[in-house]
Image (cartoon, rainbow, N blue to C red; front, side, top):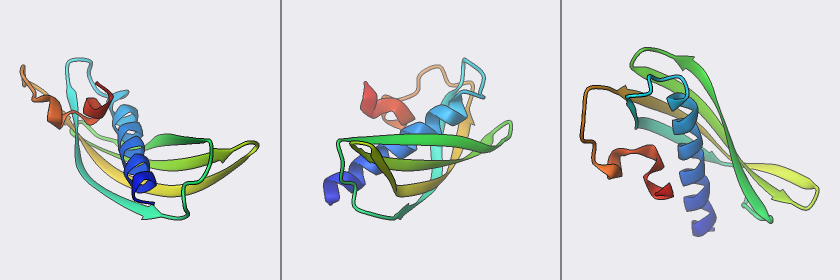
Length: 106
């Protein structure tokens, strides 16, 4: 269970980060400010998919939601849901990689 929790958290946070970043200026970076996760069911299945949506985009703060979905053959089930607050970071030429939402994908 701990592995599935870690995977669903990382994927959901990445999905929220990319959703928020898609509405930000190209020369900015995205930073997770806060998130809340509800674990709804065990993540059993062949694949785990995260889908995110921007609820409100401001100049600095963007609020997103994401669902982690376990897919097993032809059935799917939402196993976790997230509400995240993301921040647009501008004007920093060198940002440490550990602050980037997508760092685990590098």
